Image (cartoon, rainbow, N blue to C red; front, side):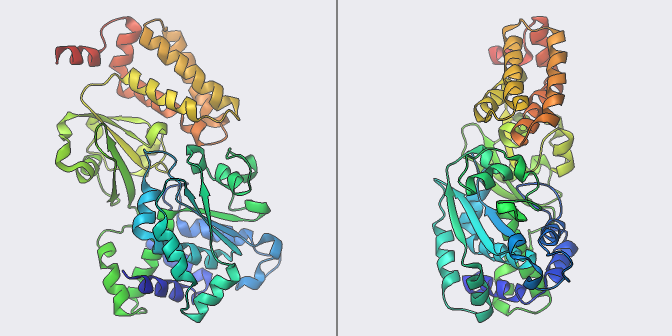
Length: 429
């Protein structure tokens, strides 16, 4: 779709009252991507409600008090090689990201907009789109962008912690990028105490696409918009999302998956003939934070419920494919060591908890751990789930707890001092 058509979608959306935008997104069932779960419409409506001046009637921007006017922050932060959705979205859909950002600003009544990218990302197309946005065009759009004072681009150093909204907002206010309890609910209390809408670039691009299709269905936009949106119309589903798929020795692949896609189909879509699905021992969902799933679960639909049941989060939409026989204890230890490096040290539950889990897994690998220590590690993991400040600590036990189930025979062999099935397989091969 050409840029002019995308800006026309924005111009059409700016003519709608916020309540109608919420209704359109809710009717479509669009869910947030790359972050907290829930419907986009519900989250946006909540943020707008937090910014209303006491006693003000619903309606235009006049109902917002200056001190409480919301802020919109779009983020394309990936944080590590395991995640590539932000980079992919900036490269493929920069205009849609800006369109969705400004639609969000209009819907919640924002006074300021930011787009956060990380060093090393290619955001040249985003800069080009910002230049187009500033050019002469529809008067309503130009007046709206002028009132916002433009869109501010913020370049940040790569860090997994920046995937946490609290750390991201702390960095925006020139503080160290650490989880911050002051931003535990940014939609109510964010930057400078204002309601702050933090959405991923993928979510914002999806908003622009969904509203574009809605306007096409209503015959409200000219034929060029309809023609440009045809490709997305065939694949864009309310439950669909981007997924980064990785396998050792292969470059990461970013694919779009529909809501009913199975794990097997996701692997085949991303890697094609490069991987024999029969060789897949299991997968890890959610990057270094994610739980392990066994090979027998490949036929299950890749849903939020499946990931959360395993102790993970679809906010980290990444899949690592495990080929051949690998020791489950070693895989869990590798994941926890990575998390130990990422832990900021702000809360003991995470920093000390991950250190203790690493120590236990090292003892298992050395053959000196006891079953009693294993039970203590389980209790510690449950404590980390509730006492950690951010997702690094809350999700850190997932690789360990899931590995205990998926690779139970591996753990049993190490604890009993017998040959690990994975090691036997490698030696016989």
